[in-house]
Length: 331
Length: 67
Image 1 (cartoon, rainbow over the protein chains, first blue to last red):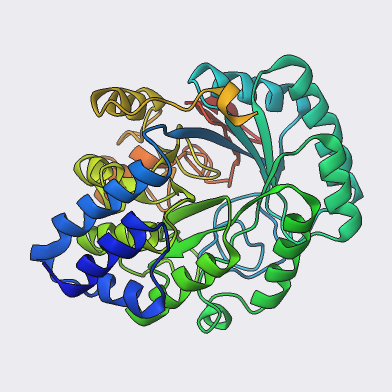
Image 2: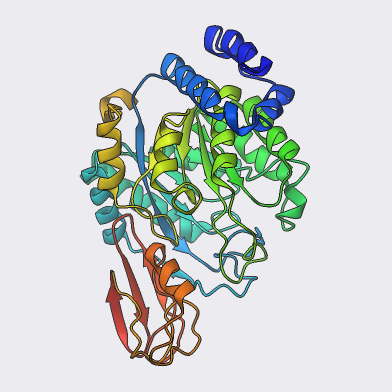
């Protein structure tokens, strides 16, 4: 057994204290023959500190495309030659999407907009949309609207948005290679305001942007410092027309190593499968991740791409005897 | 799901010509996990809304398709 896994067994599994950056890097550098042991340990950590429940979420794009920012992975930037066009979702369709999500057993419904930050029109749409959902659908509403002012944070709390997603995307040292229209620190400031407001913080990122393994460890350590309620873990799905459109996808074993490492860095967080798992891990890898530290999934489609049918994930959870977290458990 | 056929004029993923019998294998494969982006009949970029279950794509000239 590698020394780092012995250390993690005592420190993380035993005491609930996450690995530091050096420890995370050691896990990310484990040779293939030790990957099953790392995944098993990460699973044990998840079961001890989070339990067997899996949080299921659906997401929808309220405002797609035409974003002024230049996040190099994103097909919704208006600065690239991506074929994604700008489109707004109307309120009845938003409510219907929430209903469809709730039918899967999901307890979370995240409303997302491709913007630098919300303007008055978007905040009005949010207020009307969240009110309509809360009136008709039993589901928790989360939001992801870019960078916020304090007034907007307060407005979202007032609407009843219980969790706010704002991904740091990658580590601080690599961020300028991925985004140039705003800074990592600006994102951190929004996260600080969200945390102080009492909303739950959802913050993760994307692996495979060209970061080194060391930077991947740096990212996990920075997320652990933030201590978010939820960490969505995406794997780059290279989008045509974006600056990262020709990058290779993350190799499956590297993705699984990252899942184990992120869990061992953050034993209590909700670690969610997000975009890109279908092409990075496939069906078999998806299963391995759920048995290696993941305890939440996005079901159904993503914002501009399609996911597995929700039933495929729900059947897998049933087979693995991992109950879907009930709505009552989130209130 | 709507998939590209070899009788369409344009590839609905990349917008390049889809000459009969030469459907783009990479695009056909990618479309398993993507909605269409280009109208197969006129090559216009469509307004696409992805939903948790399904998607819709609207060409200003040829109307809406759903998947």
